[in-house]
Structure formats: structure tokens, C-alpha cells
Amino acid sequence: MQLCVALDLSSMEENLALVEKIKAYPIWLKVGLRSYIRDGKPFIDAIKAINPEFKIFLDLKLYDIPNTMADAAESIMSLGVDMFNVHASAGRKAMREVMKRLEPYEKRPLVLAVTALTSFDENEFGHVYGEGIAAKADRFARDAHESGLDGVVCSAYESASIKSLTAENFVTLTPGIRPFGEDAGDQERVATIDVAHNEKVDFIVVGRPIYKAPNPAEVVERILERL
Image 1 (cartoon, rainbow, N blue to C red):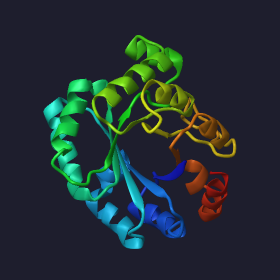
Image 2: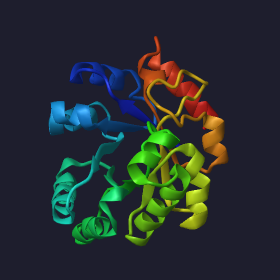
Image 3: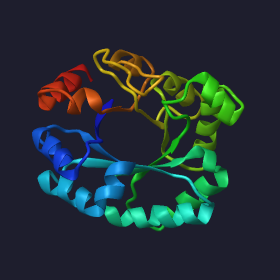
Image 4: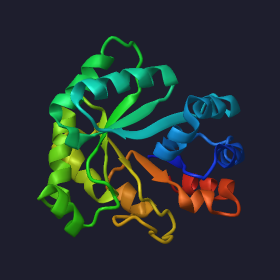
């Protein structure tokens, strides 16, 4: 299991100051929608300048018509990131088009599909999708696997089931991790490191418990010791 730290602070300067504090650790960094829209490729370049060994997960959750998603995926190839994601609810045709567009590249990022956002509870998810979270997450994961993607973004509670339906090496990445039982904030389906271990999660994403801590490096070190 690997740690991915979410860079969700309110300015590029704050995010880079955090990166400086944790630059010695073998971790992934997540660049999300707000950070990328605000700071773009220069932010990714600045991260790499601090430590070229950092792996970067670009968390934009592409969701559009198939050709537009494929165009965006091809553009991502120029950014030097190591993983990005799309929405599984865009459908199998869109996911297949993304993977087909990336075929000519000798080396490409991992491509994951978002199943159910961890901010959903059962009631709200059912209202939007007309099905329960677990069943729909399984269905989306099968679609992603059959479309040639490398894995999915899901809650920790869905990881083991998804692997049993797809493959053991089908990657699961789980946000909403509260490593030491911290407050859930705006997340509904949060989990601890122990839950993630039991559910065979490959990547855990941790944000607030690290960047709100007085000593982020100390928290990263504690998490890595648990992994």
C-alpha cells in the first residue's frame, strides 16, 4: 500500500511549502481540480523541481463525450504525471476511447476510473444513480476493467469486493482516509489504515490529517510506519 498526499491548500505557495516539508519521503502527491485550474502545469513542474522522484496523481475526474475525454487524456501525456482519472459513469465507450488514444505511447500514466465519490451517502447516491453504492461501484469497476483501465477510485469498503470481481492487480485508490481516526469532515465513507489494509487497498489518499498538522512530516512518517 502506498501513500498519496493531497495538495489541497489555498495557494500554490502553501502547497509547495508543504511539499518542501515532506520531500524526503517516498510518496505520491495528488494535484486536484482547484490546484490544477489555479496553478496549471507550472505547479507540476515546481513539484518535480523540489524532488524529481515524486510520483504525481492528477485528480481531474474527466467526464465528457468520448472524443473530448480522449483528447484531454492525450493532452495529459505532456504534463509528466504518473496517474490520472476519469469518471466511470461516462461509460465504457468513453473509457475505451481514452485507452485507445493512449496506445501509441510507450510509457503512459496509470488510468483509474472514479466509481462513487466518497462524499455520497446511500440516500443521495440512490437519488442520483438509482442503485446502492456497493452494487453500482462493483458495476462501474467491471466496466473499467473490461475497458482496459488500470484500476478505480473507490472507498476502502469497496476495494476487496472490486478486486474479487476484476483482478488482484486491478488498482484501488481510496480517498477519505483518516489514518488515526480524525474527523470525517465533508466525507461520508471514511476509513482508517487498518480498514484499508484489510480491504487490500493499493493507494490511500490523505489530505487534511497531514496538511493541517503542526508537523506534516511527522504525520507522514507515522503513516508510512503503519503501511
